Length: 72
Image (tube, rainbow, N blue to C red; front, side):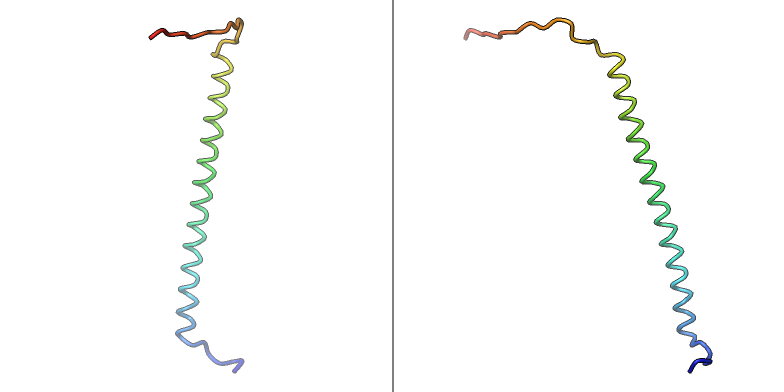
């Protein structure tokens, strides 16, 4: 039992398992790279929006109430 030669079906299953594990590893790596890229793009877009908004939007210098009154 201990020193029996491996069964061809078990060898085939082992090869299939190795192929599937390789594909799963590659898919997980691709998903991780895609996720990091999307996260980086989101961070850059938020940073650029905030910096341009802070640089180009004027500050509030005068406040006065506005009363809209329309006659029909």
